[in-house]
Image (tube, rainbow, N blue to C red; front, side, top):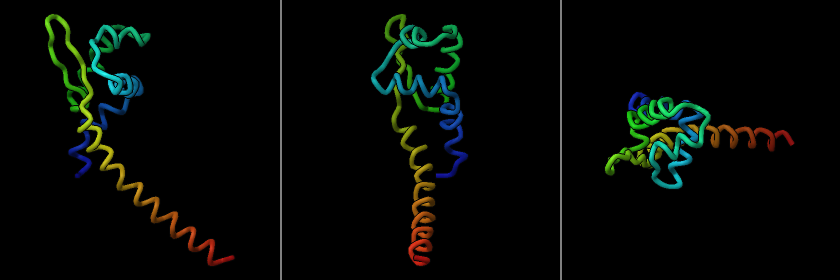
Length: 106
């Protein structure tokens, strides 16, 4: 999958606060108040982070009464991981070649 297709996901994951929110949501859905309580930033700042995560498809938001429940969307993370796995194969190949060179010189 081309990186252009992944750009919203990578943008969403680019910020350490958003990555921390993703880790929290990996443990289960949470309302914004519970998420905001874990950070030393304002609730509107957390709302902005959540909006960017939602735009990137990393989370979904469900309204229950007056609360908005934020939930992780693992499919978005899998597509980004699949793209990154290309580089795992790249490094595996490079390291195998390096190993062959080193062992040949022994």
